[in-house]
Length: 155
Image (tube, rainbow, N blue to C red; front, side, top):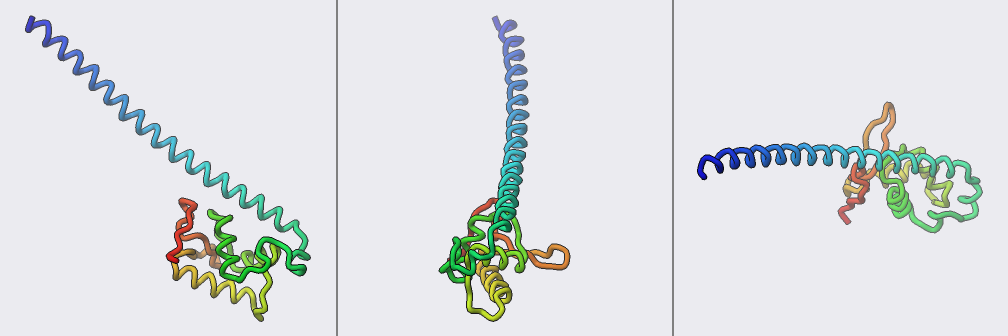
């Protein structure tokens, strides 16, 4: 009886080892697929933002003159936070950000709105809400944790 169990135990052990290897390989494949899925999700979000930006540029500039739009009645800080809440993955230059905010209703009495937007973005960067990076010759601002698409302000 002892002679029968040794080959049986050996065989069962080999089968279990094979299954463990297959299990680890399958887990690795799942992890790689999850990474690809996350990457595709980020790309789709960026594509949605690009489409949204294209639609926004088609909107009449009259919206900001009439006080109409999603940023109408907001201050610069609140408008920037709301904007980045909707555009989580893409970085924006100060010029583009200012134009987008104005086209969607932001009004300000500031003499130089771009300077005000820049200073507000720098303050939000100090508060760890935004981060900046150089894209060629200009600086863009994006969410601090835009890789995950989450807002991470220090409030």
